[in-house]
Length: 62
Image 1 (cartoon, rainbow, N blue to C red):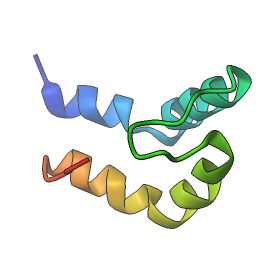
Image 2 (cartoon, rainbow, N blue to C red):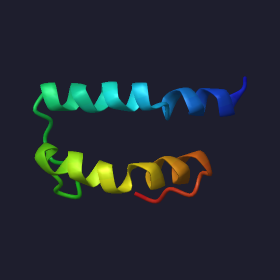
Image 3 (cartoon, rainbow, N blue to C red):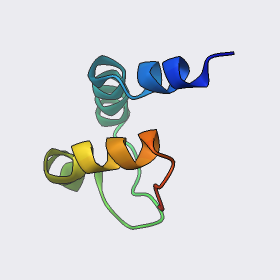
């Protein structure tokens, strides 16, 4: 199984945007960090690429 290809599919902008839109449509609850859906867009705009790279290199720490 080619896990790098799977990770790239997971981290694709289309997939992440679809997941984000689903959370917004469902009026998702705040996570353990207390961040609301309303705060998420600005946070992802600023930090999204960094988070994707950390996930890609397996260095992400929630």
